[in-house]
Image 1 (cartoon, rainbow, N blue to C red):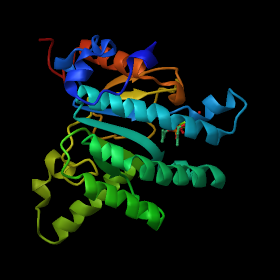
Image 2: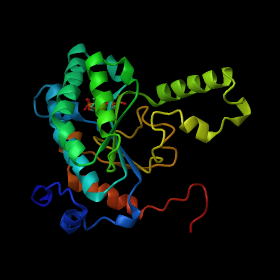
Image 3: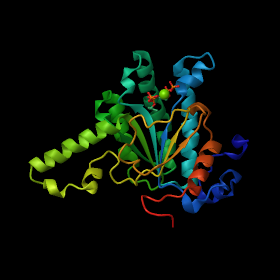
Image 4: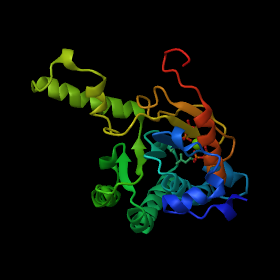
Length: 260
Ligand code: IPE
Ligand code: IPE
Ligand code: MG
């Protein structure tokens, strides 16, 4: 049913009329939603296909998910595309993924820009192939003044690696006398993370049934709500996303305090 309702309406007025979104409490939307797009391989294997076919199929789920974020005016959406641990996979799968990132970014950048999306890449982007790195940096520069959804793609990203790099940056600032050790606080750390300036993660979604963070946004998800589904990423629809947002809107968040 969702495909009849979901048109990827790009004005808030049109989106507001979409019955798919009516279940969502717009006063209680997450400021920052982070998605671990997992299960592409299992999706493919279940169909007797190569794992890479699962990654290709996952692209349309991501496009639809971004459209929902645009329609609902979510401030920030971050997706986990490739972890620092994913280099352990066979060469051909890694190569395929890198090519998929390049191809899709080239294909989608105009529409994302037109939709007001601000693109950002998290992780060791500088260690990727020069062409992909340049493409990522160019996409960031091109969309930096857009005012819509801040869409971050974690690519060659690991939460521990990010904290290591932030720590190195802090140590360099201490050594240069720019900051005193006693002045290092949470804000000083946050300012040196790849996500600097983004709101804390309110909601983490993971598809495909595994219940773990896999080194994603370790600092940023400190008080996140979690939403898991057994659905593999390529089968994740706007209806699933809306269900996650609706569940999130019903959660009571206490942040260590007491029930209000
Ligand atoms: C997630 O799907 C995509 C990436 C990690 C790049 P997987 O490739 O991990 O799929 P499963 O978990 O093996 O099914
Ligand atoms: C996490 O999925 C990384 C991405 C979705 C890009 P993995 O499939 O790599 O995680 P593990 O290995 O199951 O923990
Ligand atoms: Mg996986």
